[in-house]
Length: 403
Image 1 (cartoon, helix red, strand yellow):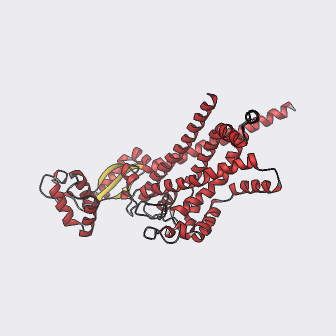
Image 2 (image 1 turned 90 degrees about the vertical axis):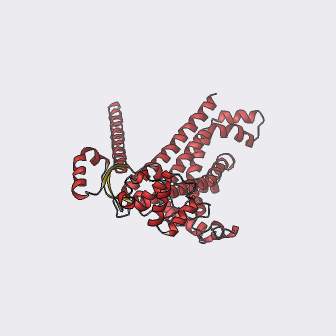
């Protein structure tokens, strides 16, 4: 029997080690493919050469602010000029800002060829030959597709000018609404089921359905959100009930609807995690509180919640991390694939980072895959930040309990 048990233990450990190694290997490949696309050499060509638009002999980069403004007036439409002046008057703009506008709008450098990071490192000679033979008027530059301009720029149909500020803002607003809905409701439900509910058939049925809801595909929640929040509650979620018709989509496909849908998606997970955390509270702690004459609510507030809060917060943040990467329910509820302006209220049209990444990977231009890789890095950073926050909160509450 000992030999059989040892053999089973050996096989179990071997399977576990193989699975762990395979998972780490797959993760390394995934991260390599993402970072490989987010950096590398590019060749860009100017629509107009600087010498063509400014032939004073001192170079465009040394032109005065007044000359740069004249270049803009002579080369772009009056409507675009008025828009730039409305955003910030040219009297208050500095010379570097006006020069940047001239380069973007008039010189208009456009990427015509891009390479991955690995190719840029190991085949640089081939890239230089391609520049000389195929793009003699082009310029070679090592580009990081992940930059501050990328983080704070709006969406654009041109890959080198596009950004993720609209999608990033939409994702953060969706998460905020989901947390406001799911966290207090989930923790309250867990407290009721563990501390107040009697073990009868109805409560057992409720518990069973909560476990079932945690395993339902996310697109089903999207269909629920479409039926309830987008259509049935359209006067509320569109903002028309609050005299917000000027800013609303008038059809309920808003940030509010999507945030409530994500809140329902993570609600069963938060309930289950909170129940497990509450069950882990030692019975001696509760009985000692009752023995001192505390009521049930006083025991919950001063003993059960503080003791279990680290596990509750950890489970809740991990549930929110799942919501951050969801795409299917947002598509069903009505997320847009192209939004040029940041959402300014919960009744605005919206997009999110996962949807933006999906839309870019579906575009035919290969440069959009570079942009998508940069957006994936931002999404991974957000996920890692949430998970790190969960660990820090857990350790903080553990230290408080020990103290």
